[in-house]
Amino acid sequence: MFMCKGRCVYHGPPKDVVPYFATQGYQCEQYDNPADYALDVLIDISRKPDTLIKLNNIYNTTNANVLALRYTQESLTSTENIEQERREYKVEAARSIRAEIFYLSQRILRNAVRNPALALSQTLVSIVLGLLAGLLFYDLKRTVEPGVQNRLGAIFFIIMSQTFSNVTAIEPLISESVLFIHERVSGYYRIFTFFIAKLVCDLLPMRVIPATLFSVISYFMIGFTRTGGQFFIFLLTVFMTGLFGSALCFFMAATIHVF
Image (tube, rainbow, N blue to C red; front, side, top):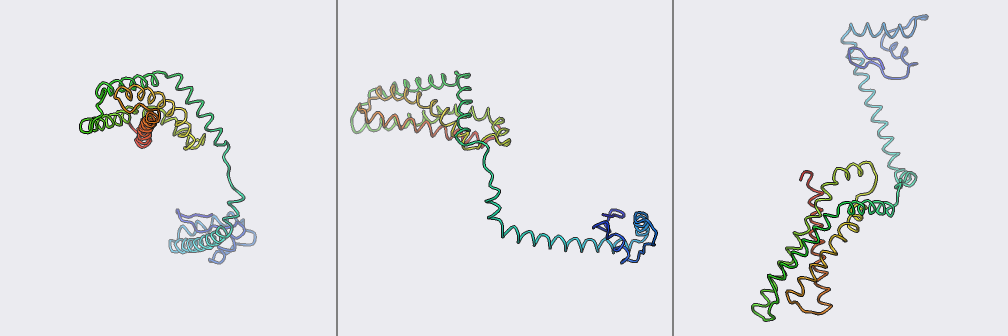
């Protein structure tokens, strides 16, 4: 590539330099050095603005045509062979999904063991809320008018308390957000394997035990139907409500960058 005053006047193979400038009126003597010849040509072009603009326009036009032709050919070739290239260059993950979940679960469990205060606080909150619900709606009467209304109030209180008592799920993800982003960008694991490991090792244990304690305390103190089937339906409802609250907190933690 030859440039003069910031403008390109030639771009091509070295062997075509002399013939190209010869077509523009710059003849090379028989025993003249091509390098000196090119330098003399550039010096002369710098003194002639019209010649400089002319050669630069030739370069721009030629370069645009070459690029357009190359792009068209490459587009046609890539369109015809795209399926074959996908089959030949299929990239597989370095680790399996099972391995990622296994190692992520190990790390989450270790962190839970090192920070027992979180699990303990969640358990104590569930016990306190269970006692509070049982005392507020203690031994409800099984009548139509006040009994049904009081039971609806008890169910509303239980759902709201279980939803908002699971705000502890928002803390781990926020505290680990920087580490998660770094590891995700580095390709250590997939996003969904991270959340599966979180669900199995963090959400489920942290919600099953507190939900069971809350249900055992509040269900019998309130005076709901004392049958095994009804109790397990109540327990499942409480657990799913807590899981919904945790999922909502996880969504908020993943959406909000600064908390």
